[in-house]
Image 1 (cartoon, rainbow over the protein chains, first blue to last red):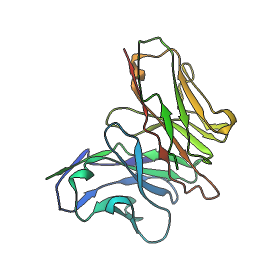
Image 2: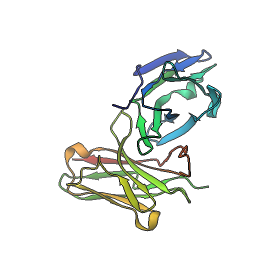
Image 3: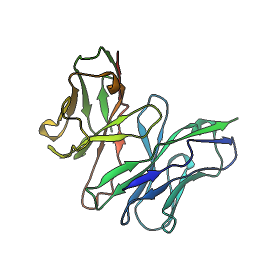
Length: 114
Length: 116
């Protein structure tokens, strides 16, 4: 079955330190990969996507993500965390061979402490 | 450019009452989605439209949920009658899909339903 896994319910990091939010997927073929962020009582906001090409993609607010085909992973990273980065982060995968369905992970709550 | 607009933002009703949510997607976006999101969880697809056609409604509980997208623009999602377990956030999203379907989803702010 197609699925997206975010193994950590919560990630805690100190402001100024690098952060990583993990995502692995099990979707056939070469899916398109996305990261979204959700602040309290708001909708999901698009951060970045991987379609093809360079394995390191850059997105909004200084975030980047690294695609690893052999490990079927798409981890979200930022070199220096800000308190304002505290939010809920969702990894999503679009299955090109199954009616372009989007599959979302369960989300990871990022807490950045001053 | 205006984003995806949803209304109402919040709705409180008693069980067995009907409720409707409205969504206006980004202008020109041909694909529209309705998702359900429970607290602290990822969105779950209810229905997806390509223009006027519902191309994926396999997860829509058709005994009480219905949706329509008139003229391929605005959409409404209705629940009748509502049950306690329907309390959740209902998210609308749209995307511009042409050719390779690489488009990302753009989400509205959501409609939070509380059923008492």
